[in-house]
Image 1 (cartoon, rainbow, N blue to C red):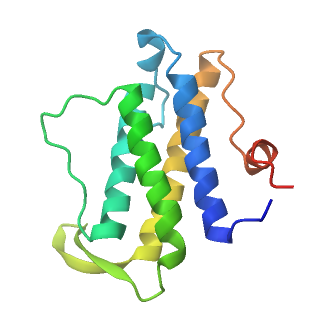
Image 2 (cartoon, rainbow, N blue to C red):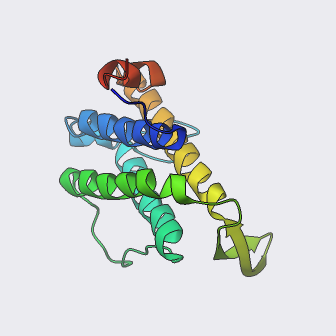
Length: 167
C-alpha cells in the first residue's frame, strides 16, 4: 500500500481513534455513560458531546473561517449522529490539513484575561488543537472506562498501524 503523507496519516489516525472509542462507548449503559473522574471534563457522555461539537467547530473555522455553533437548545447528539459528525469533520481535516500553509489564519474572538477582541490565529494552531483536544479527552474517557473495569480500546499509533495494512 502506498503510504499517506505525514499530515494525512496523523489525521487518519485521529479519525480512527475517535471512531474506535465512540464505538465502544455506544455499548455502555446509561449509568456507565454518566460516570466521570476527578480531573476530567465531565461524564463520558458529556465529554463525547464536547469532543464532537468542538471538532466540528475546529473544522468549520479551518474550512470556512467561521465556528460551527449548535443552537443553544439543541438536544444531545445520539451515537449515530456523533459518528456522522466525526466522519465529516475527520475526513474534512484529512483533506484540509495538507493544504494549510504557514501564513493561513482565521480571525477569532479571543478572550485573554478579560481583554476580548479579534485576533488572527494560524490554521496550523487549529489543526494542532483538533488533535490535542481529542487526544486529551479520549484519555479522560479511557481512564473512566478503566475505573469501571472496562478495558478501553488500544488507540495508539501501533494499533492503528496494525489495523490499516500500512506495511
